[in-house]
Image (cartoon, rainbow, N blue to C red):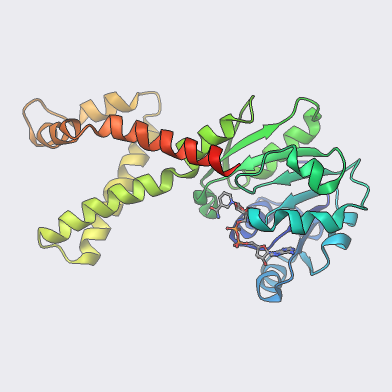
Length: 269
Ligand code: NAD
């Protein structure tokens, strides 16, 4: 990966995860700056990773080749407007904020930016994220590659051709951890009702979930339907359980839940 000067604006959970991924992957710490008004957030990052930290967004952006906007969406306009006098013509801007269309940043900065809109999900916090990536065609292939490699430090990336597909990524990946957690929560509740202690119930469900995903990863050539069939003997216990899911229209419910997430993402833009 090319070593450019990177400034993170915002020192929250996502910024921290990406910084950790970069430094642990060998990116030179002295090429990374984090800027946040909160000393409590930025100073531990400076100590832990040996990066620079500041509370001066303007100075951080001026000195950087790449700016990662990692503040809450509702803060974005207020954070970007004071940066309007900076020459952005040779800088790459990456934004991980949800719900803000790419072209709106041109208004915030009052100039045409080289920008990548990124939609990571929370497993990025443990290096297993999935980031949806979108850039306009005018972005250079070097900038695209840099953004791609940066987000690969916390997981995998999927580039979308149309910006609207970022909302589809939200439905398939961004919100997905909560779908799986709801399923795990429901299983834990029933395990407890059966008499397992909360700790044991949680441990069983967690192991069943991570074991299943590990199996799916190992046998990635097989469709999920085949993996499901492999644990479902005709007339057996799993078949009896799955019958209940089908009667409750689980596949249709999953589809309409994902459509609801897309609709909400569109409303929030
Ligand atoms: P967070 O609340 O943990 O961090 C936000 C940070 O912004 C804080 O450190 C705060 O100090 C800093 N900040 C506030 N005002 C600032 C200013 N004027 N200048 C510089 N920094 C300032 O948030 P997070 O969870 O890391 O999320 C950051 C962004 O990532 C959001 O836009 C969110 O939509 C996006 N995102 C997060 C996730 C996630 O799973 N956490 C997933 C996808 C996208």
